[in-house]
Structures are given as C-alpha cells and as structure tokens.
Length: 158
Image (cartoon, rainbow, N blue to C red; front, top):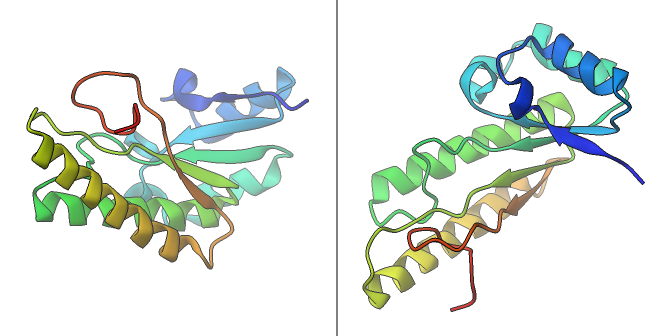
C-alpha cells in the first residue's frame, strides 16, 4: 500500500525541503497545492524548480489553484479565467511529472434551483473543456467532492 500526504502542511517551505521530509518519513506520494509560491505563474518554465520533482522517487499529485477560482461561476469572465488557471495547472502538472490534479467544482451562493442548475451546467462545460485539454497530458484531472454546505457544488446528487 502506498501512503502520501498533502504538502499543504509544509506549504511555505522550499520544494527540496518538503520532498526530503516526505522521503525521510517513508511517504510514497505527495500532493502539491498550486497556490502561493507554487502557482503555475510562478513555476511554469522555471526548470530550476520544476526539475526538482523529477529527482525524487515520489508519485506527485497536484491540487489546482482554488483561491477565488470558480469553474461553475455564473459570471462568464470569472468562469473563463478559472478554466484558464486550471489549464495552467495541467501544464505545470506536466512539467513536474504529476500523475493527476484535483480541482474544486465551484460554488454558488444563491438558493434558486434554476441558478444552481445553471451553475451545474457551467461546471459540466468547464469540466469537459478541461478533460479535452488534458487528453495529451500525462496528468489526469479530477473534480473533488466537497463537504455538504449550501454554497458548494459537487456535494450531493441533484
């Protein structure tokens, strides 16, 4: 059985230090949160950092950006930017040799069924676009199931 952990617990440490801790403690895999210094806009193309992941015998997974990201947004501009940033995460996952990335499904703060249904439709469209984008990538994308809270999507059957 393989055992891994989220690097969120070591978030502001250097990449080498985080991965060293994982290896020293017998972990087989890690999940990198693509936030802060590990955002795609900070890391993409920076071989000095991205190549580090290839020098460890660890399965790498990635959690896509999630601060202010909403793949189901009713606001077209926010939704498109959310898809773009998630695509950037897929590109980064490819650079670091990640097996897969997880993205949050989005949220809606309104109770009206027609608006929630619309948000779910937008989430479906966003997910299809991301799956198509990921087709020629090594990393596969998954949508995270969320806690059952009013505003979250992806937390129960409709």
